[in-house]
Length: 66
Image (tube, rainbow, N blue to C red; front, side):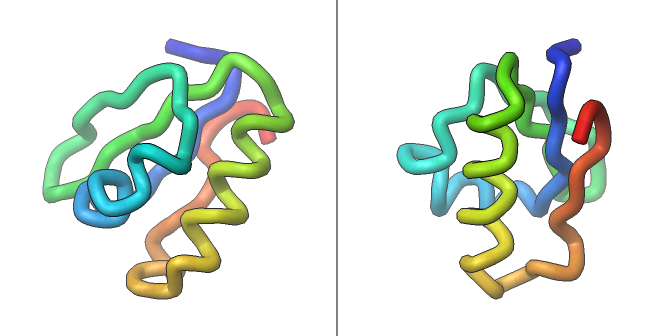
């Protein structure tokens, strides 16, 4: 487990993976994943990018540390 985590749909994470710059990823079931970050600025940038994607923005939210 990392210090900062974001919950999002697996398809959003796959589509944006190269730009999210996450330090880790883990499956949490039902086609959802947790992106893991070591630093707050990276997590905030990843959250902003994922929410701006708009495909499933209602299912994207911080889980830990934010």
